[in-house]
View 1 (cartoon, rainbow, N blue to C red):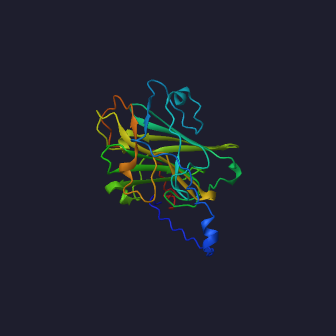
View 2: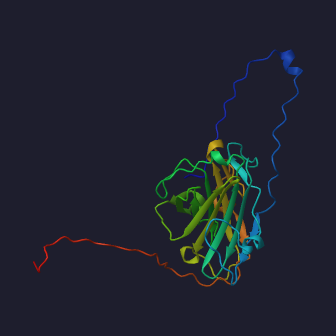
View 3: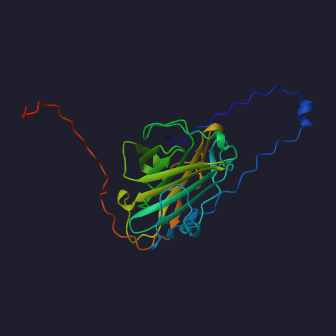
Length: 267
């Protein structure tokens, strides 16, 4: 999936007589939100001894204590305009993982595109994703995404988003749920899958959403087609206090079975 879009608009208007042109008022430009003065910021909530049941529901009390990231802005088809459907993202963390809860409200939930497919399949689908610049170097970032059916995608961005590697398959979990008002994604991303400096309490972060039926791609921290760079335009995730050194491995349960057909030696 690419996050750089080119927009080409061709307008063909009939020629008007000079007298008629002089009586027409100039067209007013569309009213768009003012650009933020600095990077957007959202604070992560510390879980402490609380626990998150990864079920895609965001009903634990801890989620209500995390600050919401809202006000997503279109990259396409109308760059800079608000997305047509509300989106909200929250972040929690503990000593082992970062948790991301995203709520994608949809006024036409029956039309949500949610095909099944393989991991990283590049489906024509609604999507929700979080991207962490966990080292906060504004050059490298890790994307974790999911569609409403739970199909996962992940990749690493390099060189401020000018290069990426979607063959990277990290060890992480996400659960999605759907209801009459939209869909929800609940992520658990182990700290060991990210590069970060333990005493750095601020990461770069971006949240994104795709609405397939309206061809909308939107971001929390605005990224417009004419902008240069991607990671350097992220917002900031603050409040990451007391992160320990990341473990560089994760254990994934795996079962293997083998059947061998051979004559019974006792026969």
